[in-house]
Image 1: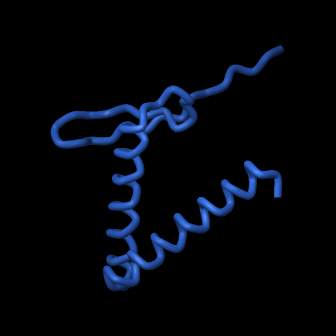
Image 2: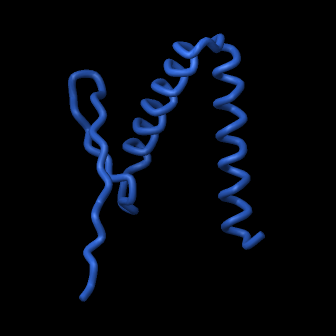
Length: 80
């Protein structure tokens, strides 16, 4: 019995348009992925500020996290 892979989808409101993005879609365009990323970062910064961080601290944490994510990806791809 083969198990069908379920697509994970999020819908982002961009301007007045809704853009559906499948997180595990290998055919997603760069534009779709960048819009998804920008929306995620905006929500994350807003949440950090609501929890008491300054915008500067939130941005510093975001920068650190994406550098760590890139390093982890590079290590994974290179087999480290």
